[in-house]
Amino acid sequence: MTVSPAIGRVGAAWRAARSVTPAGHLDAAGCNVPSDRVLDAVTGRLRRERELGGYRAAPDLTGARASLAALVDAEPGDVAFLESGTEAMAALLGGWRLGPGSRVGCTRAEYGSTFMLLRRLAARRGWRLIELPLDGAGRLDPDGLRARLRSGLALVVLSHVGSHHGVVQPAAEAGALCRAAGVPFVLDVCQSLGHVEVRGAGANAYVGTSRKWLAGPRGVGFLIVPGLTDTMDTPAPTLAGHIWNDPSEPWGGLGESGRSGNSPLESWGDRGRSWGESPELWDGSAVGEASRPVPGAARFETSEAAVAARAGLGVAVREHHELGPPAVHAHLAELGRTARGLLDGAGGWRVAEPLDEPSALVTLRPPPDDTAARAAVRAAEASLLVGVVPVARAPLHLREPVLRISPPPGTPVETFEALARVLATH
Image 1 (cartoon, rainbow, N blue to C red):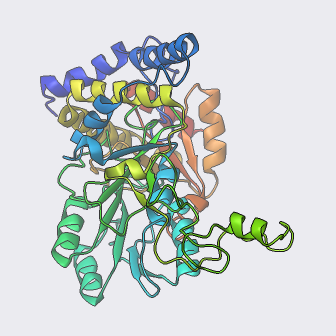
Image 2: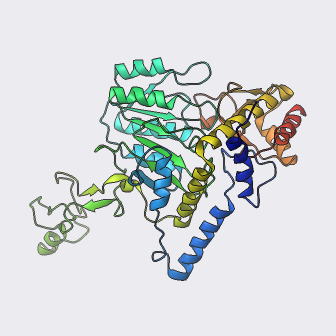
Image 3: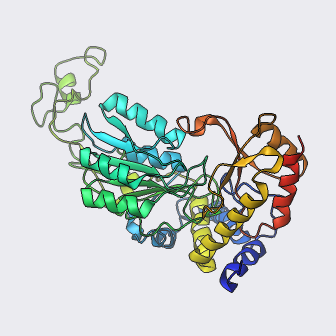
């Protein structure tokens, strides 16, 4: 296979940016290795907070937002920082105003935490979860999605690349079908942004994380919402993301009797009541919301956070742009194909994805006389860091735990050969 100079230099440049990399690191899908510049950005920001005070030292994250937004053809104002991909998905779906009976489409391969959230929201709000069909490789069937859309869906949620399975879902095709049907589309890019191409999906919202293929710090997730609608808001308003409709009347302008301009506190005092007699501050009878969201994605953002980590993510994304996203994607796809070719069949272990799948997330099913947990222990003894994916990660798709291999850029072929020997010895 001929490798272009741009692809060939990616691994060397990525490694050169890191003075320290764990030996045998094959867990980019779990937690990747930040560069020296990212480390310096985080520690430098913390020093500045100590010297100036946290709020005075607050960084301008406009550049970080712009770099993230560019990866999906969005705008800086479409980006909100949160604490993790899970928190970002909860903020997005938890506040989405869909009425009882709304049909929400997702696949059996959906990430366990998201599926758990959808189940809870369906139970509490009367939504109906509709299965989107997969083919034999675990890939979304576009014809099946088209049929589900014809039957009526209010929302589609899809993981671009699963945590438990390295198949790349046809996000661009799914997005086009949803747009044609006028149905909002949410794309989970926690395992795809920085790994495979995401532009062109045309999603209303993207949910992502820092620590995986973008190689940023832990403790940062994000939402990118180029398709924000009036039905999208957070589950709970905050002063950072919402504005009082009438700051002078935070009780909604209602007193105990429901008459405008008569505060509950005033009415209790005037009539000689004690707090124990009527503890209600508001009886819920006011019409309309007391607050409204600010424009753009800022409504989802938390103001108190690990700001230094957010600044570090901005540096990591800029480094990704400097390497060239298409070259990074091609390099990682090549690593994935190499790993699958060397590991499939070793010691009876079988690769779960097609061998030529264009991703670097590789999962292996164990033979009858071995397990993913035991193989991970043997790998650690050989100074190899791999992942074990439990069934709970995808409860409707996984039948048993699998071993996950996710090489970061620049992983030498000798690392895969060493793992093949570990798998063959059990």
